[in-house]
Amino acid sequence: MSLLSLSSSRLYYLYNGHTNMNKSFNGLSALIRSELGSNPLSGDVFVFFNRHRNQVKLIVWETDGYGIFHKRLERGTFELPVVSTSIRGAATSWQDLQLILQGIELKSVRFRKRYHRVPPVN
Image (cartoon, rainbow, N blue to C red; front, top):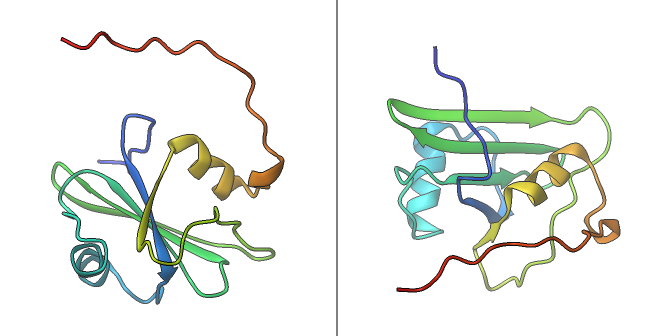
């Protein structure tokens, strides 16, 4: 059995538009190709929201097929980061996606300083 694997090692892209939540594997992968200009088989995670922002779908190609995660809120909405309307897809971090899915207000989050080692350039 394969489970949808989401971690900080993947790349995440938010679709900057409204998506019909009736779309499934074929419809979402076509949207990734046509609107985002990306390869749905890349292993990256693509995130789609409906017009009311109370539903989200994540789609990712795993080694043996597509995986979809679909969540519908019973109350409230998902907060989306501010993105230019001219951009169809915006990269986001795994941490920001977790905050969005948990309903945490993005504007109020403050990260404390941390050391991040930058690998040397050869």
